Length: 259
Ligand SMILES: O=C(O)CCC(=O)C(=O)O
Ligand SMILES: [Fe+2]
Image 1 (tube, protein in one colour):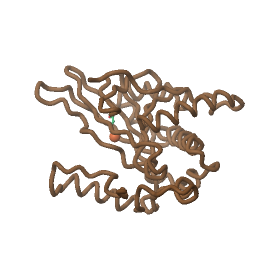
Image 2 (image 1 turned 135 degrees about the vertical axis):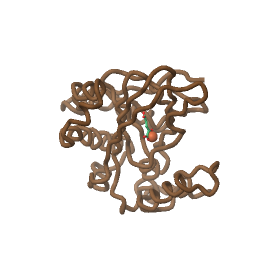
Image 3 (image 1 turned 180 degrees about the vertical axis):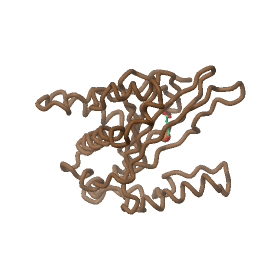
Image 4 (image 1 turned 60 degrees about the horizontal axis):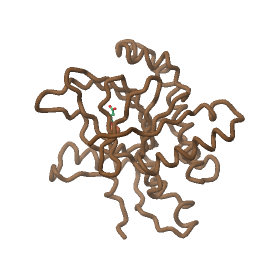
């Protein structure tokens, strides 16, 4: 059954300086959201509302927008959320920023989901994102759902809100403290849905493994062996295009160290 919804966080304390109390409260909710859902929504995130609503009003306008303009503000939100996650994990300042300083793999997708038919309502089958953090602009149709405690939770569209979805890279770096949210898209009867996910990612040659600050340095065993993001991407793609056994899901557990 689909119930409740995911936490929404106001990022304004991080945008205007001085509100330490507001920052602390927001970080508590983000930590909880990241460890329990791997998903949350943010408002006052610094992406202009006018840009978001124009994008949704008519995707043609969005595509006609110069790429520069389109992408300028979103990576900034990526860096902001990444630095908040850094602090929520109790890491020394700017560890994630130093580790993930190359923005060349970041990309945006545009989706048009057609209305559900009587026999088919799958928009996107359940999966976890392989990147660091995904930001989803969605219109008001809905259909994005997150798995939590064996239930699908609806990510209710909220005007001006950006959906934030923790990906596999953060799950591995955090040694499972933060989880890569399992999600899917269900199509609605009689309505098309438009969404624009922005994938805040990492250079594909980067070595990904649980951070020493959250493993060796505190005497915790690493829950993943290391890999390059390129190798992971290749394996995911191969499984998708040429599955040896289609029912077998390929995901980040491929690198998990079983204890
Ligand atoms: O359309 C959406 O809301 C999400 C799409 C998605 O999960 C993805 O592209 O990874
Ligand atoms: Fe996704």
